[in-house]
Amino acid sequence: MAGKIIADTIETGAGADISTSYVVNGSAKAWVNFNGTGTIAARDSLNVASLTDNSTGDYKVNYSNSFSNDDYSATVSANSSSGLIGTLESEATMLTGSTEVNTYGGSISKSDHAVVCLQTLGDLA
Amino acid sequence: MSEIIADKLTGKASAGDVTITSEGGAVTMQLQQGLTKAWLNFQGSGTVTIFDDLNHSSVTDSATGKFIGNLTNAMSNINSSITSTTSGGESLIGNTAAPTTTTYTIDNGNASFGAYQDDSRISTHLIGDLA
Image (tube, rainbow over all chains, first blue to last red; front, side, top):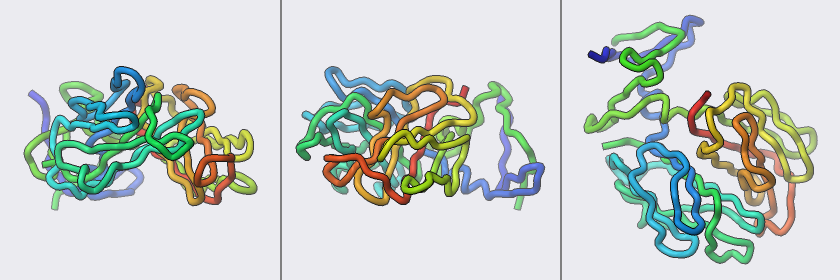
């Protein structure tokens, strides 16, 4: 049987204490590193059920466990030898169960990227 | 109020698996998987200086707008999720070279990424599996 501890504070042996709310609220609730070219595929992830390839440079990350609201903080990065950056598509596509991201090329038009990373912090349902 | 005083958290059923309950109480998730394993805020202009960090031994200034983050404790693979943001133009991860378990490249450019440039503040986050 697994052990269970219910506590408000965690303290190190050195005396530095931190509220457990920082541990729970400060942990990323979802993250993914995926290949956004060809048949898109996650290399590694947490709490990501699937990826949807909407169109060139336009992806949707679908979560296994949903967030309790759509006010989470999400960051995106992408790589490309001629590319720009990854961005969140819009506020409207930041949903409790998924987040859409866009990646752009050097001409500031959407393009697929070999490495796309998303990190999402917030409250799970 | 209850309090735990400890130097180390280890899962009981599985050493690398400590579970936390979600804010809403509906699900649980693995604590280790969600923790940021390395983060960095550094000055990328002039003499490169780390303002603050977690799990970085140093930052290498490779060339204008090109840096390498060097990790103290290695990751178990090269598939970590890494994001970066800069105070100036745009910042890319893994553009110059693919990451290794102990290093990752940070490429910093102007707003249209037409040229590399140094910026005064560059931040990175790395989440994945430690070795």
